[in-house]
Length: 104
Image (tube, rainbow, N blue to C red):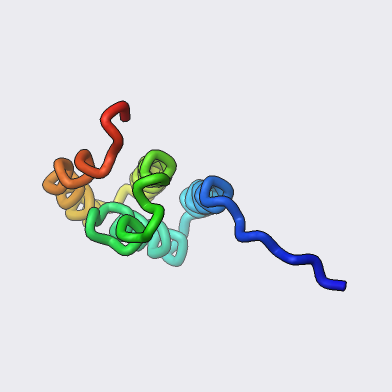
């Protein structure tokens, strides 16, 4: 008999992604860098699909925590080309702030 599976909670999935990004930043290499950079570009775009999902607003605090980890992971690769990603985030700061609850 197969047990019914429940969807994994978002917090659990975000925690897994957090650990993957930390791991990738520690092992280094071009593939790891590409994955972390792509994640930074996705989470660094306030118009990205992850922020447009039905329950996105409920998960913004954990998503922003993950984004902080991704930025730290990207920083470990120390590539000057990543400044474009950082500049884009800075330019869109107000859009990110509008997504956060007032007490955040």
